[in-house]
Length: 430
Ligand code: GDP
Ligand code: IMO
Ligand code: MG
Image (cartoon, rainbow, N blue to C red; front, side, top):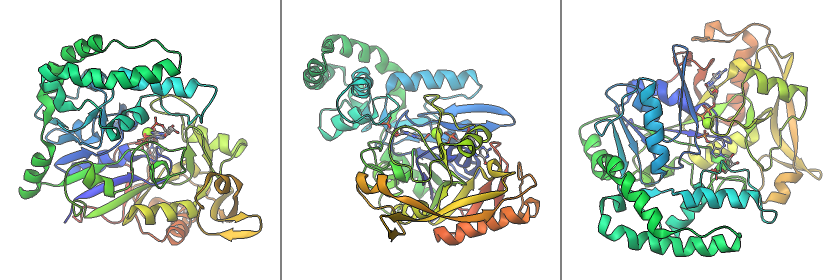
């Protein structure tokens, strides 16, 4: 059992793209199993930057099969735009190296519009979403009125399905004071795009089953992070999918033993985009310094990411919830040059001590982090590829984090570049 799932452990943007790209050298198939084009995964290969949203990061390596599983919500227009964009960068995409699950639900323009209407409304909770229509698309999937990829292959029955969906959306749109949508026009738009998407649409469960039988190595690529999980995250300030490793099985169509090793991606400090509680957030010069050194601006929306100290209590909790075996600690280099670093080891709530973040928004907003101070380091860790290249204090920081989070650090990442990685334990076991 060597198949590996990579998941984010904090609030997303931990550096999953870089690590998946690095690991895909050892994999045959790379599978996205949840989320959609709210994800922004950055790869840097010999100085060249490539940003992927829907496409599995493995597609950049020749000979790898990229799979968009049934747990993903797929915007067909965004998918074609992304394929065109990466092809301009020299990455060839075709039905031989990309498949989309027949049973994946589609994101349509009505979803992004509804997402934006809700975010712009003066009533209701503003989540700070990416406005890509992720939440509304998952709602329609659970509401059993979604249009799925396979529906694009059946032109005759498409109109009735779109009609059924649009009746629902027009009621919502009237409530928001927005113009109604014409179902026939949307059907025509989908029929236009269908021939371009159809060659990719296949029974992913069969392809993955065959890949397993043939001894191929499968790498599952998570999007977002455990703290954005719809069940386990800081609800309601979360995304609308399960981001934990168990979703790799559900969102691809392989059984619960699909994953042999779960690699959690953990940033050496903490960031968050959008609204919601963030106990170790730094609204000061230190937060600004981390944000500047780490270039913490959203890949998808360009928004400034909120920055703060490493929260070991929250990471420990996330690792347990998600079933993580080992960790890739990323962006260690961003912490170069600090005299001292702080790490949150628990919380104080009105004099009571917690070693985890309690559920419930009121409690999550009330917690005060309890910090441990760790000595910083003077030298540079940028681009280090072995322990020996790290200053002693940086090694101590990693070791202390390892103790606090109760999981081993398998990899350390020291720059955005593909190969700037310190390897302790190969997740594929080779
Ligand atoms: P993802 O969503 O988890 O794939 O992460 P993003 O790509 O949204 O954000 C991570 C950012 O950090 C990207 O700009 C990466 O190029 C960059 N990055 C990844 N690993 C490292 C690292 O070890 N050091 C530094 N300085 N940057 C990194
Ligand atoms: P990657 O895969 C960071 C956040 C949004 C918002 C909340 C809900 O690059 O790590 P949504 O559009 O999903 O309904 O927004 O989730 N969010 C992310 N934050 N990284 C991401 O993806 C994110 N995807 C969604 O900012 O707070
Ligand atoms: Mg990202």
